[in-house]
Each structure stands twice: as structure tokens, then as C-alpha cells.
Length: 159
Length: 200
Image (cartoon, rainbow over all chains, first blue to last red; front, side, top):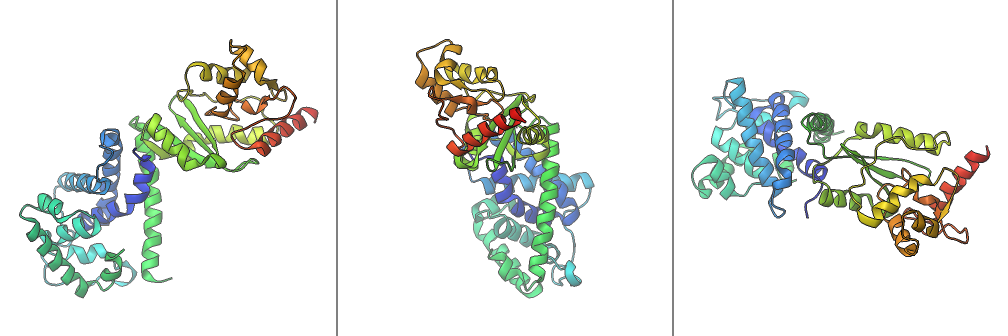
């Protein structure tokens, strides 16, 4: 029995937005979110009833995020080339994506797919290339850095 | 409010805006198979749902709106989205009906949830005029099976679009209201509303 698509949007919309922001930054994330749910709506009737809907959505979101990047003709990294120094975001604009953007690419994507997107490490490894163990290490390194650069991560990451 | 709370509220606004955009694009691409909204009414909150063909479901709160949406997902299409503006015309006609200024509904109806005898019975509901009633036996005769009185009762109880197709006007032969999917008191309210509007 498949639940109405509205339930899919209300249950997972926030997660997909976080993943899109983590990969793209806040502006392009809107487009990726829209493309993700439109594509998901199109394919939804054919999705097996026992599928992991969240993993399916995050996989689509990743593809759509890459499409947005390609269209824009530039790299996905919102804040590039500063792997060791977090950008100190100012005032209320402090947000998780900014701290994530300061991570090295592989760590950032591992954190986004696993901690924000809810994908198991096997699936994260399939997206990143390499082994599940390597994906787990990259995510752990990313989280360790975030604990220093983004103090709220602990509480948000546990939600 | 703390910063985390502020961020969460901003996300809620953003997600509402994105949801609205998704509904627009789904409709433009022909992917909005079932649109729904809820409205308040004198007989409680109503769930209204439509397909591109017409109104497919009106559900009372006592029937369970979530259950009604799940049934639409299972039997029509899982492409179900909350799209209030897609049902503005239905909501307006219902408002006029409850205000006593509308006696028939003009919105198209999609009866795909019913077939066979039940569908035939429900289609004949339009023949019972505003402010009038018909007995289950009269409805059975109208549907071409005079002995199927019980089956008429079942068909009325399973009418997917109550109010729009007025199963509340079908009463027992002794004149008592009888069963109603929205509850016996809702049926009395509707019959009183129509009697009052006629008398006024």
C-alpha cells in the first residue's frame, strides 16, 4: 500500500531541502528541490511499495543537484578551496550549509548523504565511489570538523 | 525565539512556497491526478478531492480524512497533492449551498470509485430535487431493481460524493432519516437546512 504523495512531501521535504542546500547552497537548492519532487511525482506510481522512499528521494536529489550544477556551468562547492578554515558566517545567517560548504568535497557529500539524507553508508559509498568504510571515515572526519566550526551541529544532527 | 527556532520557521515558509510551486508544475505537466483540500462546514470539516475529470470524493471527518486519501491513493492514483486552489469552485458552491442560496451543484463529478448497480443508484440521486426526499424503495425502482432496497441503502452509504450528489435526501419509508455516512445528526441538519431555505 503506497501512501499519498502529499505524505512523501511533508515527511521528506525538509530532508531533501537540507541535502540540496548542502550540495548547492541556498539559492540553487530551490530549483533542485523542485526538480527532485517533480521527478519523484512522475515516477512515484512505479516505485515498489516496499522501497526506501527517503533513499530514493536523496538519490534523485543528488542527480538533480548535479543537473543544476551542470546548467550553471560551475562547480558544486559553495565555498571552495578552504578545507581547513571554516568561513565564519555572520549573525543570523549562520546556517549549516555554510559550515558544510567549508568541508572538503568528499566529506561534505558523505555528511550530506548520510546525516542529512539518511542514506546508509553502502548507498553513500555507491554515490561517492570507494568503500562503505571509506564513506564512514569521510563522514566522521566531516562531523569532527563541524563540531568545531558549527556548534549547533550536535543538536541538529541528532534530529 | 532562539536561532534554531528562527531557522526552522524560515524553512517552513520556504517549504510552503516550494510546495505551491510543485503543485503548479505538477498541474502543468498533467501529474496532478488527485488534488484535495479541506473546508469547514455546518456538518464539520469536509475533505474535497478531484481528478481532472471532476469531484471524486467528499468525506466527512467521521469517515476519516486520512483513510479517504489513502483510498484515493490506492484506487485512483498515488499522485495525490494538497492543492486548495484546484478546488476553489467546489468550495464556493458548497458555501452557497450551506448559505441556502444554491440548490444544485454545477461542478463536474467523477464517479470512477463506483460501478454497476451502486453507480446507477448514485447517478439517480440528482433526480431527487432540493427540499424533497425519496424512499429507499423509490430509489430502487428508479434504478431499475425495485426489490433491491437494501442494496440502495448500501449504495447511498458508499456514495463517494455526498452533498454534491444528495444521498441525504433518501430516507426511510416511514419518513425517518435513516443512516448517513456523515452521521444521523448531519443528515437531519441538511434536511432541515433545505426545508428552511424552501420555506423562507
